[in-house]
Length: 110
Length: 111
Image (tube, rainbow over all chains, first blue to last red; front, top):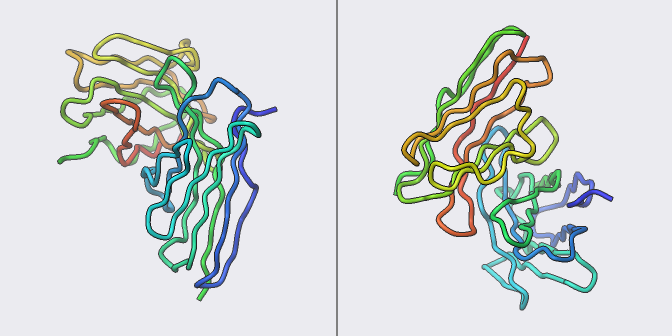
């Protein structure tokens, strides 16, 4: 089992739709979790940290399920500008090292 | 606040040649990372520095890759000699605590 796995994608959704991505991780000792957004030929940009209680930032909601070892990202009211690849990243215990998933590509269609 | 700076942005070399990449982290960030991102994959950590010391280089192919961080600020990553499979984007990131911020990357093509 890979350390961090994401939905294969791509996801093609119409504007205004709600879309959800999941990411599973194998190391139960993992401590911190993040979602990054990466536009084509650009660097990853931090979208959200994922807290145990879940957190929301505008149209974006992130959830953590430690028992099942997955994190999720929900995007409501999708915009054309949300089109990007979404990477989940997991930090292990005792280090700052992040392990990334392969990413899920989202295309929001007019 | 200035972000992570990297240069060059693009580099094309032939296999067996050498190449070096430079990174200047966000001011005050003690931790610096070099990642390799192959097309269609997530970034993979190559090496992590805390100030000018190496914290983790377990995934660095040390027969051909080397990195240093002089005076705990700027860093260089070198590949010598390059192979075709080294074609990738090399990303530098820095962090003050947990959250990492990436530079624009250097896109390397090895012919």
